[in-house]
Image (tube, rainbow, N blue to C red; front, top):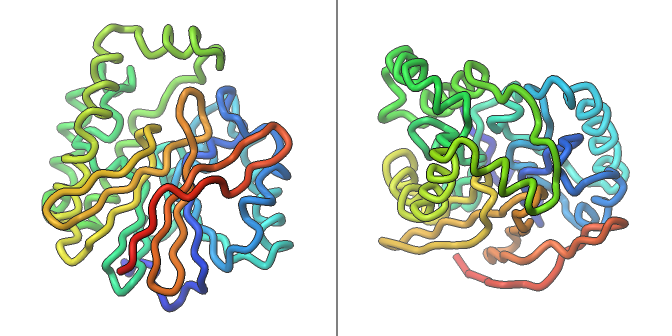
Length: 274
């Protein structure tokens, strides 16, 4: 499988992730609120977990919202590129995009972790299934395409049974803290995501200088060994959503300014020239 590459993608290329359309905890109640965030992007990459393909209670409404989003992008003249995530593994293609001649890699991020989403109750209870899947994809230890296929298989084999029961902070904390090892796995993933993500980049994309992911729901950036990891966060509480844009040799990262009515490009946090 060949990745999507520039110059096939027109600039500016804007990247966001983890919309989780129709999920009970998603802050995107109306697709129309995303219009200001899409406007002005020649290409917009939705880097995984855009929809709730595997969530029974949300799948139908999520599919409807996806159609609205696709129409909105077309109205704005933006080419929409959808990458697979652990909540929507059904998207075709290799699961990553290359920009700047392969110096920038965009992928959802579940493949960064050995067990995809180690904090999920289904993964905590299904450790043997994770090991079995690794044996079914022997090339996944060294080959990026095989690793992404394994991540998709893992998402389908161990989907979440249902959505959390509320979006208030105390409800999210309660959900994250049960069982106790779930909270521990979340904190471990957050704490180590910089080192883990950059090691993933070194192994599977040794030519890359930048890896852009979502998945962890913790926005930020980390640098090590000449490589940069950027996480665009999420549109689910308590995570904060960020945007990344690539244009004319410059990579920029900023905050998504959110209100119930609209999501816009907010404050620029960093700019790097490649």
